[in-house]
Every structure is written in C-alpha cells, then in structure tokens.
Length: 481
Image (cartoon, rainbow, N blue to C red):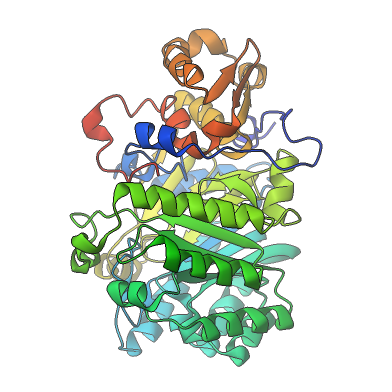
C-alpha cells in the first residue's frame, strides 16, 4: 500500500444509481427558502480559507519526494491559471487582472514557464497527465501561438495520456473558428464557455456584451473541430434578470445542446470582490424571484433531457460526468466535479491551488510576489495545509455525499478504523433534524440524501465540517442557494 492510497484513493461503495438511471431530485423552493444560509462549496476539505503559511515550498517538496518513493504510478492532473481579461465583468469573483496591455501576456508566460520547469524537475519520472484544465481570467486573452507554446512546454516536461481530458475556458468574444481549430490541434478536447445570460439589459448591467451568434458560432466550430465535450456556464440572480428574459436564455442554450450546463448562484459580496461594487444593488432580483429563476432553470434543463449531477451542474445522460456518477466514480476538486479521483493536482500560475498526497497548496495571489519568488528560483507557494487524520475521514464523508448523495458507514469504518456512529455522535444528532425535514434518510449502515435534499447538499455536508461551529465562521461564504 502506498503512503496515501488508503486515504486519497478511497471511494465508498455506492448502492444508489447502479441501474444506470440518473439520481432523482425534487426542488422544494419553500424548504430551500427556509434553510438557505452561508456555506462552503467544498471544492476541497478543509476549504482554502483554512490554509496556513507554515506550509510552503519545502513542505511541498517533501511530499513530492514521498510520491517518488517506491515508483508511485498515481496519475496527475494539471491546472494552469491564466489571469488576464481584456474587460472586467462586474459579477466576477475570480482572481483576474483586467488589462489591454498585451505585453503583460509574454512576461507572464515567461514566469509561468520557469514555474513549470521548477516543479517538473522535482518528479523522478515523467508523471502521466490524465486530466488538465486551463482557467482564468480568460485563457483566450492569449493568442493561439502563445497558448501553443505553453502546451508544448508542458508536453516537454510531462507525459500526456492519449485518452486524457484536456479542457480550457473560453470567452466566445475572444476566439473565431480558426482559433478553435488551433486549440483542438494543440490537444484540448473539452471546452467551457462563459455565457451567464444572453439578455442585452442584463449584459449591460454586468459589463459583458456577448451576442448569441458569436457564442453559438464557437460551439459549432468546436463540434466541427472534434471537441468531445462543451460546457456552458450560466448565472442566476444577476441585475435586471427576470423570469421572461432568463427563460429566453435557457431556451437558446438548451437548443444548442451543450454536453454540460452549469448554473451558478450569483453571490453578491462587494466587500470581498471590488468589481461587484459597480453593480446597482437595486437592480438585483428579490430573493423570491431568485428562487423562481432557479426553479425555472431546473424545469427547463430537465425537460431538455439533462440530469442533475449536483452543486449547480447538469449534464446529458451520456456525458462522462453523468456516467461517473451512476458508476460511483464521481469526484469533486478545485475545478468542480471530475471523473478522475485518483490523481494528484499540479497547479501553475498566480493564485493556483493544487493537491499532493494528503496536502493542498496555493501560489501567491499577486503578480509581484509570484514573480519575485520565481526570480529567486523558489516555487511561488505561499500557503497550504497537511491534512490530519480527522480531516481525511471528514473529507471522505463530504466527498461521498457531494458526489453520490449517499454514504456507506461501513466503508468509512474499514478505511479509517473508526466506529462511525461513535466518532460522529454529535453530527448524527444534528443530522436527525435534517432527517425530520426529509433531506436525508439514516439507517444503521447508510446515510442517503433524499431527492428533496439534493439541492441542499451543502447543508448536509456542513454538519460534518468541524471548522464551522460558530456563526461568525460561516459569514465569509456565499449563500447555499
């Protein structure tokens, strides 16, 4: 047994969804209204706000060395953060830099290349990359030549699986059919398109003017070029959004038949994200309208044949995410839901977050400090965390609930050598209240999230989060719905 396999490769056996049918769900708006609260999205556990500066480059190096011991064949995922955007979308909460100065792109790529070479040199053998995602910012702020050189550099340092999943985020306003073909020829086979809303009034309110024609044109070009999967991002709760206009957006998007659709709740947190201060709060939909927007979206997507994966995500029944969920292989990481559970995550670029064994790490969030570290020949890691035994068991619980809507207690007991009901005695008492409300069903062996509990899965998971024991610790997060 390798040093982390007991913890990180663990996936509880799943009894649900074994027939090949999608998991049923029920959208109870009244219950959601009652239980809506602030809470984490659990792209990791512990969440990134728990990282500490005591974990730095040397801590990361030590865990790479552990990976090298014994010829570990564990696969690798890669995340690359490309932070630049030519325009600023007012709703955005990503780490981005709005600029029209293209010279900044070449400088950034030069430093990014240094980081890739520094980190790649730590691995004893060329790891096999099974999955890669480039996010931002706007990765297509960079031209095809720049992106091609970056992909070529990664290929020179790592091996890429021929059947791997390689995705990139696309702003349809920044590419044409030729650029889409170039991305496919580089090796990308999946893309995610930012749309948010097609209504011109909503677009003006958030400073993102984007036509239906240019968006659908990119989707057609991607299919013609051989992309295997296309995702579209939508947001509900934006200023000037109403049921009639959002219905038109939903009709246009479902008519284009992307493989996946993510519909996110707009979290208005202007004290944390400065661009949001430009949004007129008086134009935001009321909480009741916002719930109706969600209800409309769910109705339209399910009517169009999409299945609910969980946490904002819908997919066509034959999509890899839907298949992975039915087979009990679905995983959740910093990029959202994933089909690759048994990979370490190498992260490159300013603010990028990765994972190595039972640890998480994050780079400097500002360019100056990121560049300064690389000028000194040091990895730009500023903080991270090494998971405790308690963190590991709670992470497994949350992962199973988030991805499969079910948890086998016996699987946890065997993997972590605990008595589940005794270890989580306080949590099971709290879970009893959610059971009374019909969100979960508990028996001696299983915790199953009911159809009406699946849209409130964050509430269920928060019970097992030991870091959320005081109200003041929850306020930093967005609302559950």
